[in-house]
Amino acid sequence: MKKIVLSLSFALITVFAFSQSPLYVGSSQLNLGVGLSDSGIPVYIGFDHSIARDITLGAELSYRAYNENWQNNYYNHNIVGISANANYHFNTLFGMSPRWDLYAGGNLGFYFWISPDGYTGNSSSRLGFGGQVGARYYFTNSIGLNIEFGGGNAFTGGKLGLSFRL
Image 1 (tube, helix red, strand yellow):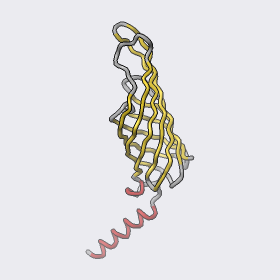
Image 2 (cartoon, helix red, strand yellow; image 1 turned 60 degrees about the vertical axis):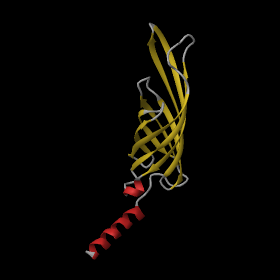
Image 3 (cartoon, helix red, strand yellow; image 1 turned 90 degrees about the horizontal axis):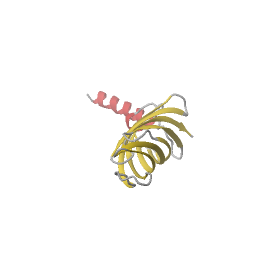
Image 4 (cartoon, rainbow, N blue to C red; image 1 turned 180 degrees about the horizontal axis):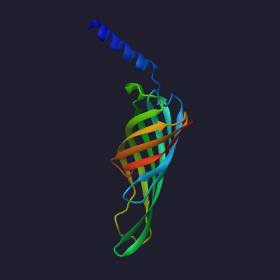
């Protein structure tokens, strides 16, 4: 029994010691793509910077146009969002390949809902907290696909796009 415990301990230490984080301290990545929403199709661009092993801070800018028929009038809305996020990347913890990046975190964002004059529906600008969980797969050392799901604020829904390690 003692040999089994020692063997498993050695295997776990080896996996954690030699696993690679997808983002090294001081490295950055650029993300861009489209989102899922019940009010238009958002496009986004984001930037993440690794401040510690497995921890990134980032920012994102999103835009979507939203068309609505409200009380027999047709309105065009524009929604611009700005957010900051923090993520924990689970690659080291789970001993994952550096081609994969599994993360979760929180965000704080503000969105501007711009509607035409005369619109009397429910539109406003708000500050909100939210959370996200996502994954990336890098098919080269610097280019990958990303998918993310979130909730809790105006940046909810899902996103699909590309990530570029800088």
